Image 1 (spheres, rainbow, N blue to C red):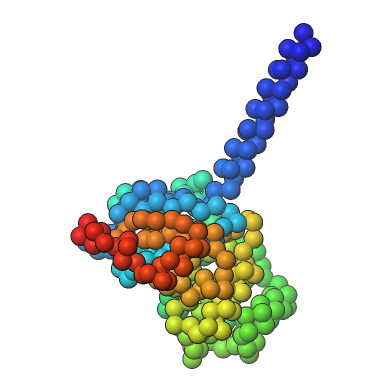
Image 2 (cartoon, helix red, strand yellow):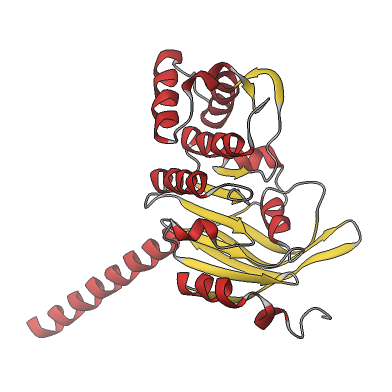
Length: 276
């Protein structure tokens, strides 16, 4: 009798453990893209895209020009310039496929831009203060906020005088990209999508951008880096590298996959796909 009770207890304990494991696994899922088809105008760009990102991970999407990398980022944020034809996007297990861009951003998704906008008359400080207020829904304490900005700017080797300059006006390409990383650190999203952030940067600037990503990353958020080369991976450890060709992920691997592409290019993955 005691043995039977003990066996029943063991069964319940194992069930509880399994339930906790499942809840942990489910709770780790941050972004899921399922069988996504997206058009830009009449042209089909994404053709059955699948991607899953968990908390605590850094993913990289690589691919030749025109493969659909930037389209992927814009589709996640539901940029109206792109049309979803099929598929789903889930964020923290909830459907965001057809939400408005600002609603998606408020859920904790941030995207940097290949070509950051210049906004005359709006200082870096005021822009970030407004953005943080919108993201959190809470008043921003000005003194603490300015000190936070100065700390981040110092870590990113940015001139603190830029705080009072109009956003990106007269900034170099490297300064603009650092501004994007500064925004990511200040807004502290759950998912940061960095679209060609390393494009046009010298070695030192790329190291600074990589440092900013390392400062941001923790076990509760994730980063999706979109790039066509491997420069940023020289100074940044990532978890997964995906090769995107003709609107589909054709290969997923570790950081070693990026080294292979650096040595051999994309020919191995584009052969027989360009006509699909």
